[in-house]
Length: 135
Image (cartoon, rainbow, N blue to C red):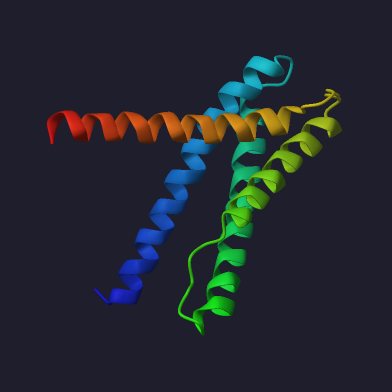
């Protein structure tokens, strides 16, 4: 297989995994916070919001790499990831507001985005612990 095609397939598989993992956490958290909306609706909101947030992160990261590539320093800026989480949280809160869910600070979207970061951290620590224990 062409190396570029292989890289694109791996990138797409990683994106699907990330959106699925974040969405699963998001559905669980939204279900705990907003019980009167069906789980299917939570899933649609989560997948759509996390996919849009990931798309923003990818586009901004490519732009950052292109801008910094001339100097040789193309390390990703963590503010781009934070911006993607803010986009995700605001999209979730906006979708829930259209369904009549009004919550003060912090909103449901902020709690879901924070829970996705916490879930990723816990998963990374668990995987690291397994590798350190058996490695």
